[in-house]
Amino acid sequence: MSPINPATIAAAASVASGFLGFKGNRARARQAEQIGEYQAQVEANNLVLTQRARAEQEKSVRQSAERLRGLQRTATAKSGIQMSGSPLQAMADTYFNTERDAQRVQYAASVEAARSEGAAAMRRLEGQSRAAGARLAALQSLLGAASGYASAQQAQQSYDLQVSAYERDLR
Picture 1 (tube, helix red, strand yellow):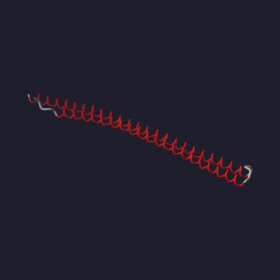
Picture 2 (spheres, helix red, strand yellow; picture 1 turned 90 degrees about the horizontal axis):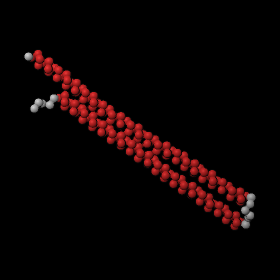
Picture 3 (tube, helix red, strand yellow; picture 1 turned 180 degrees about the vertical axis):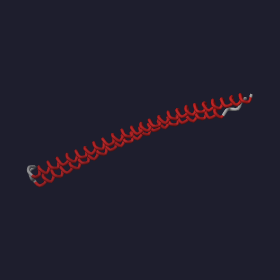
């Protein structure tokens, strides 16, 4: 049995290294996509939580205003004054201020929703971008393996030519 030639070992090592690099980079690409999707889901969950908090805040503003209107009605009725003029104006002011406060809460909620949606989209894109880079690295691993294999084969052919020339010179 003839000994294994070093060029064959180098070619096999190059192919094995390239294949393992390819598999590793493909796994890294899958992981990058999964991380990006997870981060996007976290942003979406934060959006839901923020919307719930803003809805509770708006509800609280409206309930506080309703209590204030009740107190105003009670105070006006207790004083024996008719609900017109200044007391009516105070009630109207309370109502309109409540609506303005509720609209501010709704506007803040919509701004936060837009930010969360944008952040989720950005996280997905970042994951996809990292995955694309890992896929490219996987292909580079295969190309490197092919190049290493070709180099080892070329070195083997050169070695074989040198050996045959040497043997010819010896005869």
